[in-house]
Image (tube, rainbow, N blue to C red; front, side, top):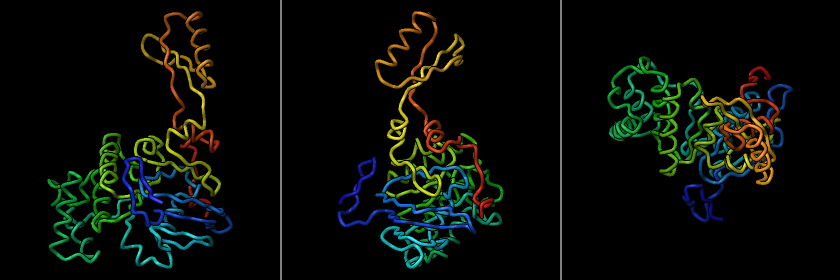
Length: 311
């Protein structure tokens, strides 16, 4: 089988799935966080959604060799992430929710130090450092202490550090949490560029727009299992229906009318509006990923609890 992502990039015929999981279970104390989770993913960009407490971080921690599973089969790039963790760690990289750089060192010192820790020669570590700092727009700040960086700059540096070993798969656990809109968009651009150049990405996020923008496939984790999977558009189609928005002269939404989504249904509602409320500005929109999430999980993405509270 040949795996392709939405950009048309194909993996070799004999390439294993990027991630293959069967019957995965993991508990924190008496609480089962992952319950018989099963999935298989091709190379590409995949976004994992779910309220905090759904097990996103636990799942990523298992996939990225940090913790063992209780039971089930797990393969990442064809390797068992616990039994073969030393081999797998040379092929993957993980950036967590909080920047892991040394704030007392400069950007380039952080980069070169990690290069040496990854086993690169001094010259190769310097070369990778210069390349990645330039790629993330940090060259002019390379000699500043990382502790003086803005939040967006620290996240960029953190991801750049993770790319030192040129991983085949990059795990990003809520990479843009806490960033302002501009910094978030800049980081999205960098993640998109990585994907376009062939790096597979598995990210967790609490920003549904992030999944909508970046992911080839979106996975929804709830109750310890993957309850929905597909492109953002496929998930929106599963929810179905459209919403007709009525706007006043200032452009403010003054009423929303849900419809079944069928052409005749929408046309009927629009005809009724034209007769009863002439002059009203009308917009028809499809469900948002937020609405998909709400329908699938029964809770808005901001209605969250932490995994730590369940452990």
